[in-house]
Image: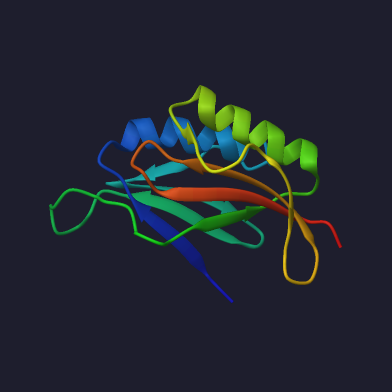
Length: 125
């Protein structure tokens, strides 16, 4: 459904370090810098961070969350730990099982260094 997802950043180097660490736990190669943006590409899509083109400070979306699919709970835990170790903030409950409307989910939530809400998710079936 999506070709890419991009969030704003006020510090490109800090964001690259953070996302290289968490996406690296999922087997994604380090991002590449393209001017005022960094991109991480996979077979299933692209994630990017960008300094806002209008020159205003980047800010996070109130109510927005970007979810990264993980293969198993160990990947979610490693993703979360790498995020906290690289400037992210643990939010909500610790990583673990949650009951969704139709299935159990394993979720791990963080705020990136710019305040964007992100999560790692494994559908348990």
